[in-house]
Image (cartoon, rainbow over the protein chains, first blue to last red):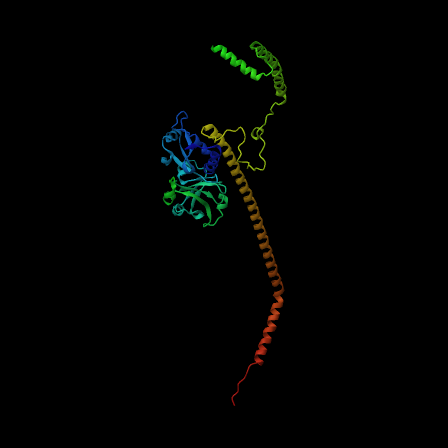
Length: 191
Length: 192
């Protein structure tokens, strides 16, 4: 495990900024954190298979006691760097993103299962959405009971989406909590 | 006994070396010292002179290696990214402190905000253009409809004004003719 380099930090932040906007600063310096202690100071660490973990500095320092091949995970896995140097968010990052999401989309009860099975969101399934959301912007998908279900990218801006027919796609799926079952074999493996 | 022998032997050896020298031991010794004295000043000075004169002329020129000069090697293509700049530290530079993370974050958010803003502006402009086009199309449709209505009305008026008197006369004439024709054309059947 090592800290991120400058370019890595930049790519990670630009990806997170798609979903969270300027509130990423809540990740770096949580409002309830005490800067004098390690336990509340948060950090990003690059682990095996180019995975990025979000954990407290205290935990990251403790993890140095464990051999690299024995260390499965530390803190929350946000995603991984691809071979081309881009960053791909995993569904495990939903816990970190959802509380600070900038744009949200609420799915009706009849649209929850199609989304959790890996489908895109059609207009007929949308219960509510954030106003003034541009095209190709990251959004967090929630159920009508405000339960985060995943995240995606808008296919159309809110103004355009109003004129789309009910079967038209308004959000492309990026990750959903159904992956915990569908991708069970590969989500946490190290080899 | 022993020292005399040794002297003899010494002399004999010296005699061999110097064939012109006398057999007396004193003379032989004197000759030897003379020759030594005469040889000494003659031989060394030229040598010394040579070394002194040769030293500044033969000063070795310093040969620089290619590395020292920093000249790029010939016929070698080195991609831009591969060769690291001189004097730069090797290895990765990690970002682990909050301040540097915050500066990176500021750059990223400013960039993203700009992108979102430009997207919104673009979409708003497009929306305005679409709205204007829609209104124009509606106005054109209205115009076309009103024109059609006008022509319809004018046609109706024309028909009414023509018909009132003429149509009645025509109708009477045509009907009387029809009645006469019908009577003439009627087939009759008679039984004998």
